[in-house]
Amino acid sequence: MTAIRLLLVDDDPLVRAGLSLMLGGAEDVEIVGEAADGDEVVALVDRTRPDVVLMDIRMPGTDGLTATERLRSRPDAPQVVVLTTFHADEQVLRALRAGAAGFVLKDTPPAEILRAVRRVAAGDPVLSPAVTRRLMEQAAGTAPDARHARRTRARARVDTLSDREREVAVAVGRGMANADIASHLFMSVATVKAHVSRILAGLDLDNRVQIALLAYDAGLLDGYHDDTP
Image (cartoon, rainbow, N blue to C red; front, side):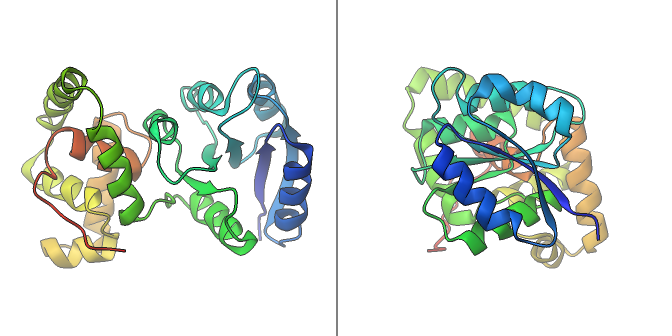
């Protein structure tokens, strides 16, 4: 079994020590490095080649948002999971738009943080439909002019999708898993995966979270209400 190579980034040495103790004990996780500031991240990633970076958002110097944007703009970038004390705020939204695969709260139980790392390493973003909805509500609270400009840009990008790809994008935006999308749209799971891959490649997106946010920005989810708690 190949271990997941994990890089820890947090300015608090006690937090890093706790995460290292909690996560490094798993048989399938290898802690390959630690950083206390976003300035250290890119060079450390080049040296240690992690699969996943667990990144604190708020740090002195270069914060986790800037570090995430720098990492995700590079080819062969590792997956990033951001650490935050907030369920949903503008900084988390910015991190997800930059390509973070999800986020976990700092008070999340160790077993759930470990599960999140494993999911992201397997290509499955860590963001529930309920959290996606809260983030979208956060985005809706921005200035009307900014929302209009973002919607215009998003619609132009979505217009490049086929009708079927657009249906899949909406389903992803609703937080549906591949199996549920397949059942809902009467296609195989393999076909759903193929559509998702084409959407990601065609729109230059990093993950399903960004598909969901783009679908929201374009107005494809208007009128949809998810009652997931």
